[in-house]
Length: 242
Image 1 (cartoon, helix red, strand yellow):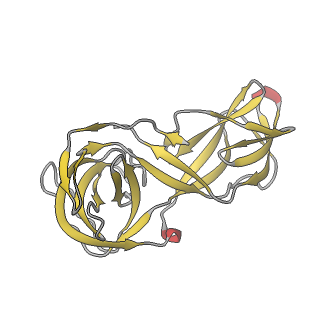
Image 2 (cartoon, helix red, strand yellow):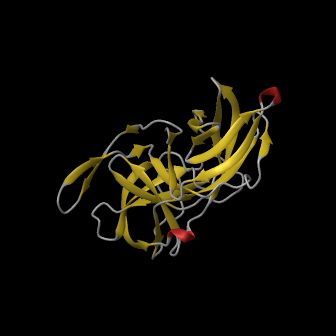
């Protein structure tokens, strides 16, 4: 499921690897792949009004590494702190490969972080982007990456996905259309762009976002929602615009 639409790139940088020299966008919006937790809030059947949360989940990045040394501060184009050793960094997929970004901190104000790439696949990061936060309540929704530049090499290692930071997801009931219940996700404080119909599986049972529920109409457009099952391994891909 792709959300927050789009893919855009401007400008380019020549990146040399042992095998090939490649033109890579200096600025690009990409995507983050997340795992979904099991639904919460459906332990018993419930009545859900239009606009209310039918159930909640959490998202965790599916690609995770740990930095093994401090990376350097960036001075040009606005100072951006380096990333400290031991920081967990999550995968951000671009058209030409994957960068890794540190989680953002809660709180007001503008925050920029460095996202790093390993262009020659030698186990060290050698390219740096910067990215702003999308909002003060956002931890993992970092937005587009820009300002790609070479950097002094710094090592990283795979990290256990059980350590991944998690962010809340609300599945919001949006009403009925042609007899089908419709739902929309809110990730942290951002809405997905599309609303999904709950696809029929059997009488009164339908599936949306990998969760099967029994959904029946109630007064004033509300819905009675009863949990049936959920796939063990579910994921979504959040796609950003520039």
